[in-house]
Length: 502
Ligand SMILES: Nc1ncnc2c1ncn2[C@@H]1O[C@H](COP(=O)(O)OP(=O)(O)OP(=O)(O)O)[C@@H](O)[C@H]1O
Ligand SMILES: [Mg+2]
Image 1 (cartoon, protein in one colour):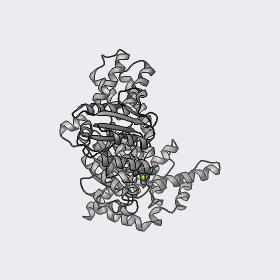
Image 2 (cartoon, rainbow, N blue to C red; image 1 turned 90 degrees about the horizontal axis):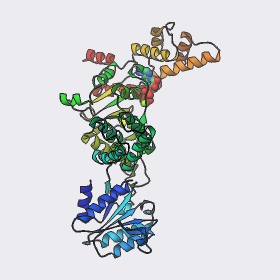
Image 3 (cartoon, rainbow, N blue to C red; image 1 turned 30 degrees about the vertical axis):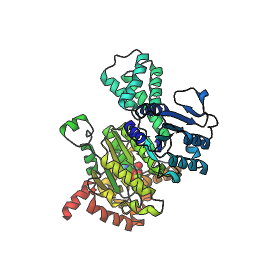
Image 4 (cartoon, protein in one colour; image 1 turned 60 degrees about the horizontal axis):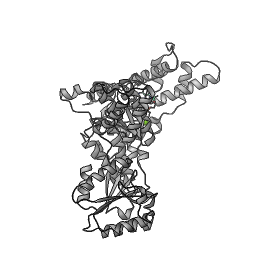
């Protein structure tokens, strides 16, 4: 990345947008680049101090350069080769004068060894400059850089003699953080217990979770339920269990490729989200939910893409991890076709996502769910994109029995007086969610009457419910027909049924 920046500067790119919140690290990198031939001076602009030469005291500020317009004008007047870093210009780029001055500057830079670098934690490029600017994401610190930070803290607690293994764990726990953030979490761990050992890894990890929560697009999900909370879907469960150790070193040595991801299609309320969440427990990997709704940000060109890139970068830095994208059909609705409705943002996002899926080397397992297949772009479903596409159908009679057992057991310690077989029979066409809702309705009913609920209450609630498979029978039938051709059934009974058919 530093190399890329160096090349751009040497190739006399006039305007580079460096997206980073780590000013110090980035400035150091720029200063190093400025040392290589031809040597350049580095000037930094901030709205508080105007233009100051890098490494010089603030008192040496160039006069009257506090306003962004004046600063860029000053830059244009410079004759020598130079790198001009404008920090946090983004709130000003909406001003027509600032944008125009920048364009004037670019035009005047021809053959002049001058480069403006816009450095800011958010990417905000005005349309007028889109064609002229190169956007670079300054990457998060590597293990080596984090190691420097950690070493300083280890010196302070005089525990330099930790094993390489523990050191690696402490480093891995901080991966995905900026240098300053890593510094802070190590300090917190150190202050909490006065040490930095294996025990402190958890403190570092939980601090990291806090920091990721704040970024708003990715969310750590903690799921207490296990796979046992899911009724039926035996095929899908078997597939997942088989891959429990897929991200271990042992699996790599065996020669197995890393699983890429799975797509779970299906009828609403049949446990798609539930099974995705419980997989995290099964595999012992952190579950990160990517909220596609929050990725979209129409405020400036490129903001949505930057959001997605950042989120994926963070997910990779925490890997091995599961990246959970619920209702992906809503996010990528239309895909390539929706160019006119939102200026092409969703199709560009979709493109970036596919490329990332294709190229990713890091062990991030994508778990996506969808229930409107017709909205999913075809490229998505192509073989090889996901390891497997599962179809979750309405539960069979046996599966419904199982779902009743699970939800009744959650609410009452003894359920022997319920006839599960009968309950399963009366709710033909119900989804798992509808079964749960009927049960809750029955409980309310009995609760209001001041007694415990029984078999008949549940049957009455079931009778009073019109399931989705009836109200939306056409959609459900269409989905089933579609999935039969293209997806693997999540329940074994459907698999047997397919075998019978063929
Ligand atoms: N197979 C199942 N076993 C046990 N509970 C289930 C099952 N299916 C659904 N449920 C219950 O219904 C709730 C909703 O299910 P879930 O959110 O997983 O459905 P979904 O398939 O993701 O639906 P949607 O397509 O509407 O997002 C679950 O939290 C669970 O309590
Ligand atoms: Mg869901």
